[in-house]
Length: 127
Image 1: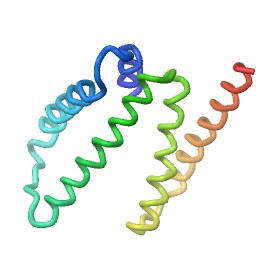
Image 2 (image 1 turned 90 degrees about the vertical axis):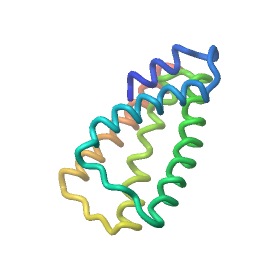
Image 3 (image 1 turned 30 degrees about the horizontal axis):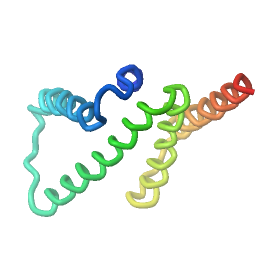
């Protein structure tokens, strides 16, 4: 993902965000398809609706993320990407009743601590 962030920021405003998303998704489909070919399960019934909604929401999120990397510095935008860890844990615990192990909680805490330290470090150097 870090490589994707750097590439998107280096492209800058030269290409439209949808062009970048198109290439990103094409590579993802090819790699994901090759890696899942032996484990493929055909979606049925309402699973198609879930997949379609995942595609629409994912596209919107990717569009805004790509645009933000084109406009702002990678060092400013990338730390915000790690906030998804917090949202993923909250959704997993509330909607899916997931229980996290001590190692998972420790890893999440390290990511959040790293995010906070990065923000503090950047704010110290910018002032």
